[in-house]
Image (cartoon, rainbow, N blue to C red; front, side):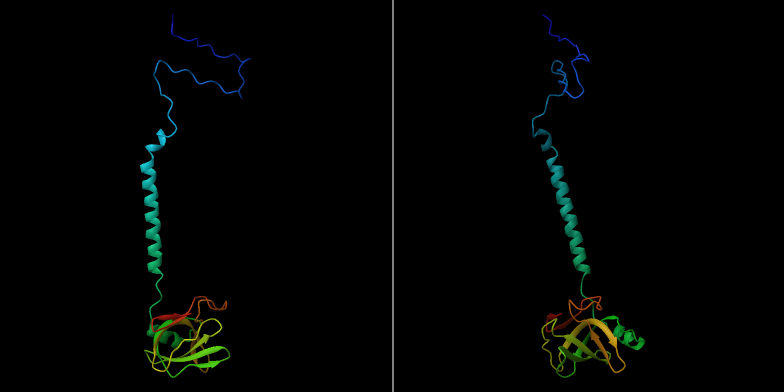
Length: 182
C-alpha cells in the first residue's frame, strides 16, 4: 500500500472562487505545524511591556519638563520701571513692593497703593467680584503680576485675576503671606 495521496485538484466546474479551499495536507511531518491560540503572543509580551513602560516614562518626562517651565514669573522692578518710563501701557509686569497705607474700596474694586523696590508708586486695581479681598495693611510686602496701565494722573496695575475680561491676555495675581489671590 502506498501512503501517497492523489494530487488531483478540483476542476473549474467544482471549484468556485468564493468557496473556501481546503488547506493542503502536510507532507509527512515536514513544514509548520499549526500553532496553539496563545503561543505566538508570549514571545512578544516582554517587548510590548517594554514599549509601554518606555512610552509612560516619556510622558512623565515631558509632563515634568512642562511643569518646571511653567513657573510664575520672577519679580523685576527694573523692567517695570523701564516700562513706566517708556509709557508701555498694557505690558505684563511682575514686581515686589511695599503697601502704602490700608486699601480703599471704590465701585466694587479694592485699590491698593504699592511702592516698588525702585521707588515707583503704583495703584493696584483689584476687582472684588472676581476674587476675595486681599488682607494687606500699610508696610506689608507683596508680589504682584498683572497688566500695567498708565493714565495721565496715575500709574497702576490691573488684570490681577485668573479670570478677567478679554482685554487681559494673561492671568494676574497678588501674593501676600504665602497666599496667592487671583
